[in-house]
Length: 302
Image: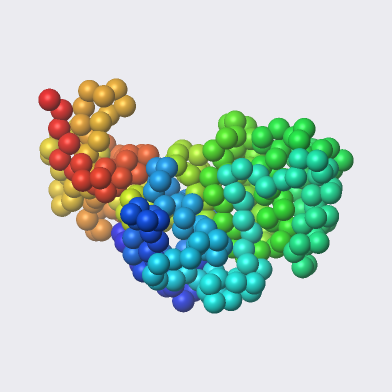
């Protein structure tokens, strides 16, 4: 289930090849290979400091890699920056809005900065959510400001959407509305989205592919359903037949050590959890691979 799991980098909307980035002594990205399929919504999941923001900033040509390269819709942003950025819609964690401007003024500013910006499209997205166009940005709720940032990104009609933890500060209803607008746009426009988060439950209903990033390395890259079907969880050292241990972590109540197991490819289609194991949730899968990345596959309770 590596980063080459069924996706050719020649047909990927977003691709990384041996991508590494260091900040002094800290390694943010370590030889990352990645291929995000066109038309997909990919969850980029990992803890804070895993390298998610750095990866997105390299794709935006905000950070220069120490080695390796990326391609956005087939274009290297460091060789052809203006061409690459025309293909990207970017939504940061903190909405990039000017507090003293109205919503309509924000759209007008975006049109002046982005050739071909579709004001009518962005306006329609906001009106669907009941966000007044004459309202000042500094009076918007957190969810409304996030929707404005998304509307601006969508108005560029970019082929690739890069979203850097946009759900982190939103309440549950605002998260649901944000995701729904994103999914509608991807479906109707045929675009591709990379949605970053450190909380898997925020993005699992929105995405069809999962990339787990930990310690600057890709720990898992596969379709979401494959991640669910291809793993089992046990509370004891009794693996399902033919399975390989991934990593161990504490149960939610802190009383047991849970071990995540990767099933053999032939066992994923029809395998049912038995008495010794249970189906792994997506959160379990993420915890198992992050634990493996920290070298805690042998975690034990005293």
